[in-house]
Amino acid sequence: MYIYLNGNFVTEEDARISVFDHGFLYGDGVFEGIRAYNGRIFALDEHVDRFYESAKSIMLELPLAPSDFREAILETVRRNKLRDAYIRPVASRGKGPLGLDPTKCPKPTLVIIVDPEVRHPENLDQTAMGAKGINVITTTFRRNGHDILSPRIKSTNYLNNILAKLQAHAAGAQEALFLNAQGLVCELTADNLFIVKNSRVITPPLWVGLLDGITRRAIIRLAREQNLEITEEPLTLHDLYTSDECFATASRIEILAVSSIDGRRIGDGTMGPVTSQIKRAFMEIVNREGAPIY
Ligand code: PXG
Image (cartoon, rainbow, N blue to C red):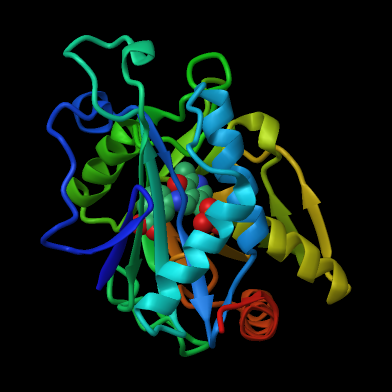
């Protein structure tokens, strides 16, 4: 695979960055996770916008205009002759002296990695409509709120999420659920969350403290087109435990059913009918819409 590294396409062996890069030293950077389906990149402009917003928020000046960055993503997929891929742009603060000061890092590092193997990390069969879902526990770690580090920034500083993921694994679950400081439901470690209750689809609002997921946005849009009732409302654990269906969404995993939360089985533990309907509609959209690569 060819990797885009600061304007050049290099092999994995040649894709080297400094140990003095503040992305490595301090987790000082931002990233994106994007999918290409069937020769098209889904929601490319939304991902480009979010990447630039994350960078702006941490005062990381990217070395190229958004339109050139967009083209660099397309070109990286083309160079690798791919039609389906997971795409990972990463920008870090770049090389600088030891010490936090980002103003001493003159040149950000910009990387675009593509991965042709788009498989769900838990190796769950996500194509079958009756797919087995994931088991989720509530983590004791709280989602970093707007008062600490904006959850809207997709930063390369995921230790909070990683600790929660370790806690899930230690408990024998695949995923961890974050609450905010008030005990309201936020999201999973790398996915947004939806529930279905009495045929209504509900997801927590952004102000609770969660990433403005691009899959989440697409699902809110398509659910409305499908004439499903969908709202953004604060949710508690009780709402989740007593939901009819629950599902997680992210670019990488698309839509995954949640089988259980803290040992409470959700529905019959497999993907429910409303989730299946949404997933079908979502898969149609991603295969039809998107920026043509070739
Ligand atoms: N919440 C968080 C905290 C995330 O990191 C999402 C929701 C879903 O957003 P999108 O825009 O993808 O619908 C994410 C997704 C990976 C990976 O390996 C992805 C994420 C984070 C870490 C790893 O795909 N972000």
